[in-house]
Image 1 (cartoon, rainbow, N blue to C red):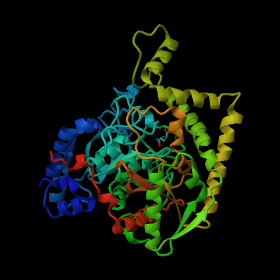
Image 2 (cartoon, protein in one colour):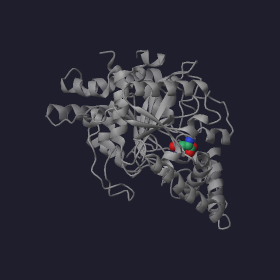
Image 3 (cartoon, rainbow, N blue to C red):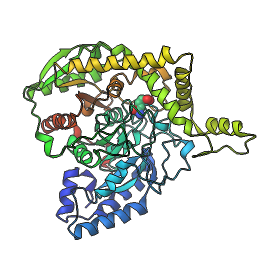
Image 4 (cartoon, protein in one colour):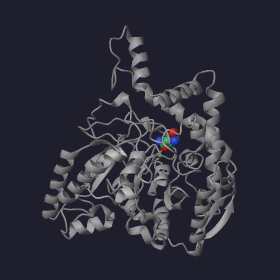
Length: 492
Ligand code: GLN
């Protein structure tokens, strides 16, 4: 079959079960596409050909033996922030360019247990800091919809591989929008679960109180399949929640749009810098949801102006602490011919980290320093709590909250936004992480340049099922999620 890459996860699962094709054929099909098309997209840092084929054969053998699960033999791409045993795990940094992980992240191990086949590791902003994937040591990944545009970030590689049909779905991580914003920029569906729903064990840490892993795929249904694999309680992650995991696939029709109260935050639609086409597409999608039975309720989120300053204190503060382990001694890059130990630390870190990472280390170290800790870090933590309370108050009135995922569509590669401009682009996503809430981005159309626009729906704690279900209902009635970029139509 030449069009295996066009199948949804459910269709792949059914095809494998009916022996229409084997995991080996499917995996070879994807590897062939990667070899042919990825040189244009530049989404993979590492393609694990041999591992993938061995896993595919093992999956086919399990199926023969009658021991296959719904996902046995389906290929996946992992963001290069998940530790993969025996495979380079770079986090997009020169610092870890030589790092072969000795163990698997829980998410990766769960994928293996379910029989998923690892196609490889995909590009990202260095240490997940950024919104374009351009800060990667490996260079920029291209947006499949327009190769001179960025795929978003930091999970830009995960978005690009799915949008170009170089993997049927992918894992990502989201500290301040890194699943949702690239999903939006590449016309995909991406879910950031409640903090504590998916294990952080083996994920290279950026900001530990904000980081959360989740699925990136074409549809809510495809995301639900991956959530069924990765959601868990994990004793190896002390912030993982001991709470029963739902069957996200079985629940796809559990929420009806009839009477669903969708909150529209006044403040969100008056943000300076909200692109007119983005606003129009989001409003059209809300109209559609209304037609399908939802009730739109205007709400207030009064803390909106505090999102960016609060996040850009807390995230760098935690990052500066997390990154202190890269000292040229224990992991990764080590400077040549150090004069003494201080010179070793200094040069390893100056040469191993890129500019954006160094900027965040400086901001974070400053905010945590003795003289400024109370004025900046403690203050930011207090505002963080107010932001959370603002959301909880809103959820007394509504079931979900709607917002654009990002104020714009994908930027041009090299647009060289100054850092503050780039940080302002995170306005709609970062508060969700500060509050620990789940949120989903789904495609709702295109701007005048045919670049995708995303709608974000934010839910109350542990409402992943509901969010997936709401988007699934919307996707049953619309077809934005099945549009494909021209490059995805190319055959290998
Ligand atoms: N763009 C945001 C940042 O740079 C979010 C990144 C993320 O979610 N990893 O911090």
